[in-house]
Amino acid sequence: MKILLTGAAGFIGMHVALRLLARGDEVVGIDNLNDYYDPALKLARLARLRAHPDFRFEQVSLEDGMALSEAFHRATPQRVVHLAAQVGVRHSVVAPHASAGSNLQGFVNVLEGCRAMRVEHLVYASSSSVYGANAQLPYVEEQGVDHPMSLYAATKRANELMAHAYSHLFRIPTTGVRFFTVYGPWGRPDMAMFRFTKAILEGQPLDLYNDGNMVRDFTYVDDVADPVLRLLDKPATPDPAFDPARPDPVSSDAPFRVFNVGGGHPVHLLELISALEDTLGRKAQRRLMPLQPGDVLATGANTQRLHDWIGPCPATPLRVGLRRFADWYLTSYQGAARA
Image (cartoon, rainbow, N blue to C red):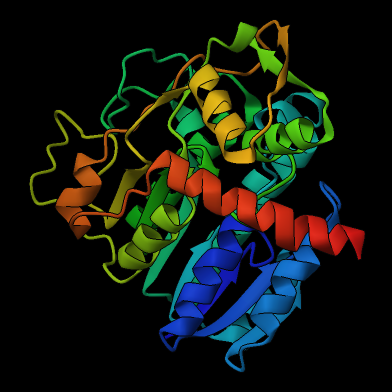
């Protein structure tokens, strides 16, 4: 197939693109290569993709509607994977306009591109952060998501609602994917696993917010990329059981679906630190900090709905994933930095 993938130079985007290319798809990658974190890491990811003859890259910002529209017309995609966004719960607190521009206006531009090209299916990244103040664990898609704790979470929930509107109005099949704390090789420097590893290896203190009393459903990146491809291959369809008198919030009489994609095994933050210490062979210096604005205390994914739709999904054990991440960090990442 011909696939347009936004956020191709990003963490999850690179892994998804490599899988698409490995199975023989043509991929047009879109990314603005901004400096939210070191662009050198994005360029290194991009270099891996450029090695494939079926990959083509265009540097385009989502907010530039005209440029994105032209990229859609050049790509003539059959299906679209939209992973680009201004990420970061905490970043959205200090830079709200960046989140709104990329995640709201940018998403409208993606939807318009899909409408103009009559794409067969749009799979887009949502986030577990949409569950917000909801404290009922594990999170199930049918739960309420109307109390976001950050602007980032609000933009991701807005994306789901915007996608439904386009599915209803223009019958574009759309599937939203609520990611849960993804980690692994080629990850972002602002992510917890990356920051903790860097601090331990450099002998710097780890900032543990809410005194470390946090729980996260850490999900290895391969366990995210696999279901993204399988969802892409199974376009959303109207739910024949949908009842407008008692509407299911994540299905519809339009071709619209939303799924949790997470490991399903929440881990206490202090347990993660202990496992990371064992992996790296070093002890962490811990600095206990208060809870930050926008953070939630715990996350955990119920993925039964996803499994019912596409079948069983891979689940990499935490210590296996940590070993793979550490090996990449110590060789490829630190090696490139030293060079």
